[in-house]
Structures are given as C-alpha cells and as structure tokens.
Amino acid sequence: MLPIKVVIVTMFEPAAGESVFTDGEMRRWVARLPLEEAMPFPFGAGDLRLDRERGVIALVTGVGNAAAAAAVTALGLHPAFDLSRAYWLMAGIGGADPDRMSVGSAAWLDWVVDGDLMHEVDRLDAPPEWSTGRLPLGKAEPYAPPAVSRMGRQAWRLDSGLVGWARGVTGGLALHEDAETARFRAHFAGTAMGAAPPAVITGAVLGGSDFWHGPALLDWARRWVEYWTGGETRFVVSAMEDAGITLALHALARAGRADSARLLMLRTASNYVVPRPGLTVAQGLGSHKGEAVCGLRASLENAFLVGHRVMEALLDDWPRHRDALPG
Image (tube, rainbow, N blue to C red):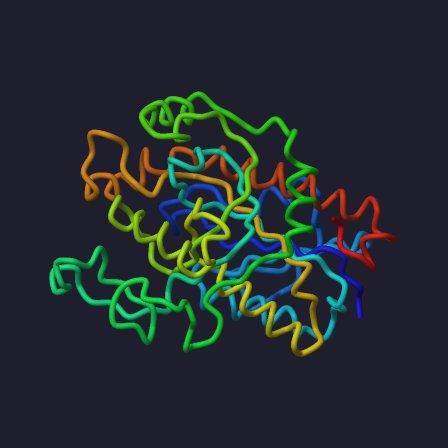
C-alpha cells in the first residue's frame, strides 16, 4: 500500500459545455503541483491524480453531500493506499454571508453543520409567528431546545488546534484580486464585510445539497448554525458537500481507515448568498450565470493559493506532522 500524506478533496471540475461554470476546483492542483499520474476512479467525478513520490492524491467527489460521501468513502477503502496518517484537505468554493465574509476571501472551517436533515413545511403553510418553515427533526417548532439530533450527527467541530495552525500559516498571504470582483463587491458597501478586500478568516459552513439564496434563508442559516453549535461559532459560508465529507471521514475513522482529526476544510467565496442591492431574490438567483458568480476566478485561485500553502507546510515538516497534529 502506498502511504499517503495529503489528500486534496475538490468537488467539481466541469467538462466543456457541461456546467454554468467555466472553471473548476481541481485543474490548478493538477497543473501547478503537478499531479501527473491519473488513476481511474469510478466512485468520483473524475480520475484520481497522484504524486507518488510526495504521497499526494487529489480527488473530485462530484456535487452534493451524497456524491461527496460516496467518493470519500470509496477512496478511504481503496486497497492501494494507506491513509491512516493522511491529512484530508478539502478546498472548494461557496457562498458568503456579506456581513461576515467578502467574495474572494478564504475561510478555514471550525464547524461543519448539516443543512439537509430537517422537517420542512412551506413558509406559506407555517404559523405566522414562525420565522422559518425549517425545523430540527423531532421538534414541533423552529430552534426548539435542546439541540439534539435524532438521526445521527448534525454538526461537527473540527480540531481547533489544527484549524488555528492553518490560519496562522496562511493569514499573511496576499490573496488574488481582480478588477471585476472588486467592482462587484462595491455593491455591498452597506454590509459589514461585503466590500472588504479578500482575507483569510475562520467560521462555520452550512453544508446542504440545495443552492439557496436570499435574506430569509440567510437568517435561517445564521440561526441554524448558532442552534446546532450552541453559539460557539457563526455561519460565514454555504456549500453543498461538507457534511457528507465529514460524515464519511468519521465513518472511515471508526473503521480504522483514516484519522478524522486530520481534516482541514477550506471554502473561498465565489458569490454572496443574497442578491446585490437593487435586485430581487429571483433576479439575483437568475443572474447565476453572470454577475452572481463573478468572483469565481478569484475564489478558485485563492482556494489553490491558501490550500497549497498548508499542503507544503505539512509536507516540509512531515517527520513531525506524521505523528502529531500541528497546533
């Protein structure tokens, strides 16, 4: 079995004409490391890419929690690789809360909260005093205490020492910026962070397989994260695979195939989860092919820039990091 030091986890890499996106999360890793060897991997959304000499694998899981969980599980059980000491570095894009994160910024995740497991009634059918039709499973009203899941884990806290170390390693990086993204951010000058230059931060992700948009759902996301984490962190970014990846890695750890404490998750903001001032929610979502993801290139560049710095730091001091977590 080939000992692996770092697994790079990405979620999408579109072929020409297959997606509204014109760029993907994997290609910079393949081109710039490089990862020259390709290995067929039918459980993901493309071949595995390998650097055998340095002990690095890159994976494309596919979009959504189900695809991500299946791909990570399959890789963890692959007979060719020893992943017992591997660090799992997820690097992908997401939608930012403009009061907490700006487009182009990079967030090291301290908590992962599942946004799929819930009861839901249409908002039009909900009692007027409810702020949302989304309820925790087993509860009869939104955010009813105690925050205890009846269907397994709903939130995971990542190793705080490792997350803090990653932020320390990358906090001084000059992140990629371009004029188009800066012009788009200027529309959000009335928010706390929406117009700010890109920076490296920490915060929580809400990982659900629906692409949601608008201020009502933003309010729900903030309160959902606060509810499930006991107020220990705050929502900063939305994404679609994080809960599935985390769940799979914890299952692999129980099977002795991975160390779930060695999980680092990075999300860079390609868009905001609310429309810019002057647009309705429908207009904001409808502009998805245009300005709504105008931070795509900056977010993809920064996902590689920030993630690569941490990968190199792990490899450069591998004799120490092999046996003990940084931080």
